[in-house]
Image 1 (cartoon, rainbow, N blue to C red):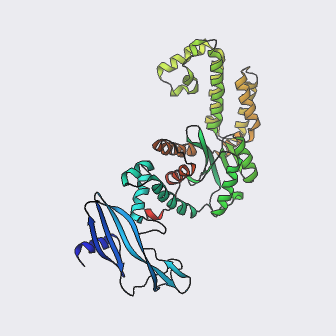
Image 2 (image 1 turned 90 degrees about the vertical axis):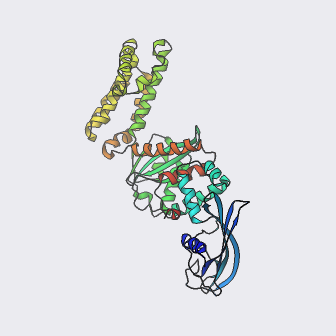
Image 3 (image 1 turned 135 degrees about the horizontal axis):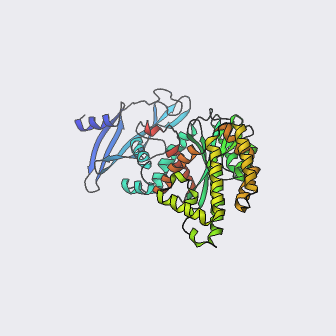
Length: 406
């Protein structure tokens, strides 16, 4: 064997009875072709039941795309044997560099998966000179296999959030294991059926919906209905950030109404949505001036700060219960219709709002994961295919044991 063949055998982890028969370089096409064979009388382990040293039944010529050799495409050709196993019959042998039903080596696929964490699939396709559907096939095959082996037996506390595959379209619901800080499930939609599918998937991975004791989510009627039906032993915590977001929406509605009669409020939206500590000195001065100009908006803003103080300063449920009820009484008497509407929403979902002071669950983790999902979406400039989007969510945000990386 020449040094060149020995070098490639070492790099490809080739062992007897397989050997490199010849290496050919096509200068005009810019391609390197490595031709493999196996020794006469060679035996192989059964790829199905792992029976040792099975005889060869027949062979099939197969080709794999390998990592580029410098700037040149590289292909491996192999007269691939089918083993004749006494236990389970004839099966095509899978060489160590390949994967069943794939025309690419594991190293090439690992390279693609590594790039997929940093680049849009369309750009990877251009870079490796393959069609993007081929790249998606590689990525999704590895994620599907890794996800099928995911263990969910310890999942007891779940955060639920939704996000869109592109601006304003095709929502998916993302389920996070709050203890492990791990995305365990993502599915199309944002209704009760998403929780039904989560409950079923949990069962498929060694988990049990009856062991879910805590759920953090927003006040979506679909989520509430689904949790009540499928997560029967779970206490619901309505995330404080979503609750305050509803209050901010009420304040912004007041601002829009008041702006119609007071043009000075034009362009002041973010002053009323931020806390004073987040404003610049100039913004604080503007807020003080506008507060004197419009008492209704100033009152609503103060009510928001007081409501936030309940979350920030109170740590026990009993005190929080007393403080929230007093605030709700104030809201009902405020004569501010959007604030009164918000108060009614809190009363309707009171148990879940108060539950925060017991569970202390927030969407902070879900929001952190969501920001990573938004980065994935930004890189790809949105996803037309919802399954592709979910695959990238798993690749980026779920703890998966992907063989190509090992």
